[in-house]
Amino acid sequence: MDISLALGGGGVRGAAHIGVLRALEKSGCRVRAVAGSSIGSIIGAFYALGCSPDEIEQKFAVLDQSKLFGWPLSDGAGLLGMRGLLDFLRANFGDKTFDQLMIPCAAVAVDLKSNREIILREGRILDALLASSAIPGLFPPREIAPYLLIDGGVLDPVPVRAARALAPGLPVVAVSLMPPMESPAIPLSLPVPRPLAERLNRLHFTQAIQVFADAIDIGQREMTELRLGLDRPELLIRPALAEINVLDTINVAEVVQLGETATLQVFPALRRLNAWPRRLRGWWRELRSDDSFFTFQP
Image (cartoon, rainbow, N blue to C red; front, side):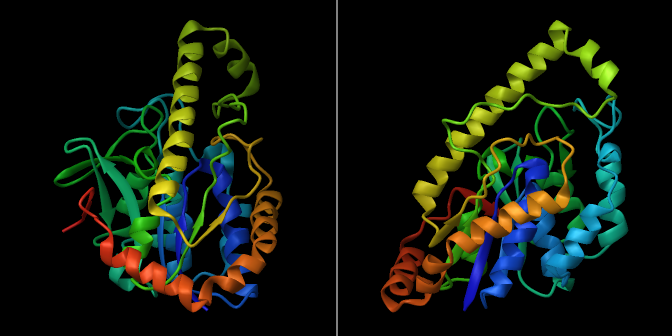
């Protein structure tokens, strides 16, 4: 069965996307297009490049998570630098462009100049992934002329419409990494040594950052629910990730397994996706959809 995939943002929770991809392949699904926000854009780009779920997991398993993000501020208007992430992405994507990918792929970002969602589908993959992953306040915005871009999850945590536009007529399987609204917020863990972290946590400045992070988390959870209700993917997969914060140090294999388990649980619904009534409803929704709220990169 052919599907289009929408991969949501959520920091290190994104390792669950790898398990989702593995389970989808086992079920016989063929991903014909993929759109992602933030970490979803990174995993999606690896898959669109032709990497298998096993290969993607291996890349993240050997990655030194403590070196992904810089401290203190080093390269722009953000609390943390992105040097480690930049080096990781550069080593894997280099100067490759979107037209070198094996399937259609898009990275979703938000333009601070026009207050609009931007769907990045052209140019260097590296630039698009950094822009889509620039969590406001934590990481500096990324300029891709004429835009000044931040994390796509600000407006579209799970980019269903972008995935649908990449492959009209195909059912969209969406993967949300956002915990339910009723789940308590998990304290933000800054990537610094523990003794320093304990001292920082006593500062009013750090406490203010935590309040800001909690507010962003609440807003993204609510935006996720609103957009999923509006865009209505044909199938939603929600791994159990409520105990993981976006900057935590994780056991990659364990989080991958959470994604695979969540996908196995929806296999019955996945098999029903090819039913004609459901496909006809999807095509009708596509004909009636209004994509004026976002801009495709020219």
